[in-house]
Length: 456
Image: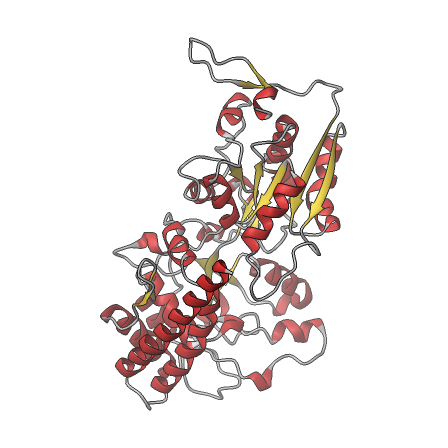
């Protein structure tokens, strides 16, 4: 009813869509915005720019920092929704999970009518970003995201040229990627030689196997029955592919004794396996672009030439590969008494002007959602971050039923078992059987603990 009060009566017999009343030229308004960041960071990233263009709209900012107490039994989503009920904000900055929960419960304002009314330009926003948001809210648009995160395969062109190996291509399979990695020489000192492929600072047998498996559409747990599903032919093939790559010495493994322990900025960047020329290919996220820019400033002529292509895909099922994610969705509270002013804020943060001003200084490791500001000055293939049209919504929904505590437990179990297989003390079948059995025990315990917590 409150939201309806700001609407002009425009939905009559002709079926005309209701109009949202515009702010008068000198009309003042106040909106409350809530997020998980601190006020200083919010002001630098959003508030100051908005206030310059809309001086008549005053922003009151509230943060969950210091309010929601984190502990092993904290249900963050539940506590956050309780916080919102108390604060009654006009604008919400939401994670994907919270956005889905609030859209499902009717707590978010439907933006599509006012987008049409204001002729707000959605065409410049990447379809992959809009589709990702809509996939979590029944195909409708209750929020917008000015930026996104994703992954791509970075490759060191200098190393490829030096070793006469052809460059990687978009949408390779894992088999093609690892075959390419094996074309780099494996001779020489392990401390100084170049490797075909690396996983960055998150080097892990289990991580590589699960990356291959999820690309092929495999789940390690059935989300409906909550039973382990790793003792299958599909996971055996994924594990075989990953372990063979490690055995061939094509995959870089970081020595913990060789970690950076101090020195100049040049030393810091040279110890990075990719920048320092130890790794020819590496999967990393949009945040790594900033590291590469800073490294170029520090190293200048010593900086390798690089480019990027998409992450690997499964040729028969490319939709399972999409790594694009949205971490901050701007939405309007359906019960806000200041819907127009709140929409003006959301609209500005997602418009061309804001993208133009902020695209060169991305925040939180993300990059702008507006395609016209994604160009690389040196012609690199930035499209690799969003080219794949697949959608990760199904995978995220499947993961939502799995107790978070179990994920860490499974990592430890699987990493130890795959290490046994790598060193020849177990077959892959034996390792997968052990992961299946031990994992099921921990999964059942985690689910029982979760249900007990809900009862309590």
